[in-house]
Length: 500
Image (cartoon, rainbow, N blue to C red):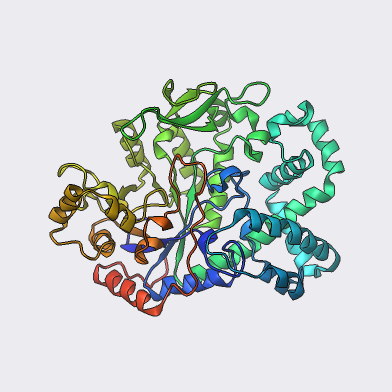
């Protein structure tokens, strides 16, 4: 990943501006790609694209393979003939923040209508494309489509509260419900067909502009997901489908009780026995959707913090070993060299570092973490290796301006002393430092390039509500900003215009 110095911008598609309640894969997406190209960037980092559930977090999805219907551009469905312009007229009215509930309401009104029109009026070639999509993606799509149809049928109850036969993924129950819900299942497949048609069009547009898409693959999946329901033997579950143990991290400097995430943990033995088939399918599909991938919570591939499911906090967990070497060796045999880097933040032990180096993966460095200790701090620019990906901050951090304003006078002086100047141009002082350093790839949140305050923060970990709603203002991406970014990118050797 670090053969050439590159830089890019972090922006999830939900945060794009537009005429509706959420950013979509429409014209604003292409406008942003044009801005990336004009500002000399060669990477666009996004968050996971899956359909979100409770809390609207892209890291808690109903599927590790499916796409989020809320990102579908309805205007493009007019162009496809599945909707008419008059269908969209009552919906216009740009929201300053992402309004998930309104976006879901609009989706639930118009996508069924689009589906009916598709069934009645789709051209022969488009019907063939749909049939081909359903066939090639059947290994995940069949399970996901019936999962969503069943979930809707049972009043949006999670799968582990369904009647026993279908909860257990019983073959005869699957056949029975597959016949009963055939229309609803076909509708879910149509939604995924539309989503991925639009997404691959966006990816092709970006690649044509010499922009690589950098995706994000969470290590764990949500308990209420088609993956866990359809592959229960791969997870540490009770006979009734509830988890025996859940994921998290132990108590540390930031939290006296640790973090209890609640995801079910993997049952690694059957994964080893079938040579990690599910992981191979998951990674292969994600590498079709993107060009590069960040793999979240990499330390979990060395050992996971295993918390009994009946524990309310993460205090009484234990470390359990993970077959990370076997997994990544199997992935390399199947897929070749892996264009991944590791999210290796927090307290990283020697075994995790050894695994990362064995896999040949760059690690992450966050400049907001750099100035609170002495010269050995691994996030300080002079300690950052070329085989790294550097950020001012990530989607889980405050904006850099918000971070700076929250520092004490003493902490600000520590930053000034290290950088050697007054820091009167924050956040650009930290942006410049990130672009200067040796890391092969530099990723900058768009909020920092726009010098936005803490109110533009994307996510506050541990806060269950009010996240993921930040939205880019219309007309915020002006040519003078693109010029400023391009000049600085060129100055520090990251302006990349060639393919590859």
